[in-house]
Length: 175
Image (cartoon, rainbow, N blue to C red):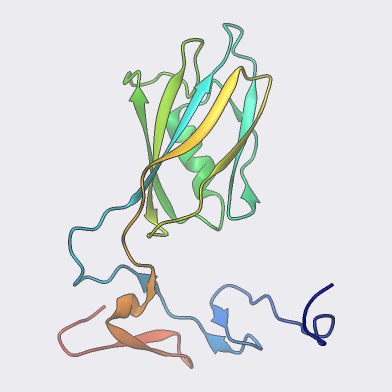
C-alpha cells in the first residue's frame, strides 16, 4: 500500500509530441548538449551475439520501454540501426561492428559478433538496451562507455518560450 492518502487519486497526462506541462498545453523546446562543456563523450553500448551454424534465430531490442520489430540474426548493422531509429525513444544512433570487423557480415555468427551502438541523440548516460532472443545461443548487452553529455532544454544556453516552443538564446548563442 502506498504511503500517501491520495495515491489512488493522483493522475497525470501523457502529452502528444511537441507539448508538455501538467495539462499538455505548453509547447516543448528542443533539447541538446551544452556547447560550453568540453571533453564529453556519447554513450556506447555493445551487443554480442552468437548463434549456431543454421543462423535461424532472431531477437528484439528494447530501449525505454519501446521494442524493435523482430531482427533476424542474419541482419546487417544497417538493419539494426534502422530498427533502433524506428523507435520514438531513439533519435540518432550509429551502429558499428567491433569484432570481427568485416563489412557486410551479419549481426550474429557461429563464432560471435560484437557490435557497438553509439547514442548521438539522446545524449547522456542513457539506460541500457535490453535484448531478447529466440533460437539464439548467446545474446548479451553491456556498456563500454557511459555517456557524459547533457540532454538539456535549450542546451542550457537559453530560455524556453512555452507559447511557441522555441528557445530564446542567451547573448552570444544562437540556433
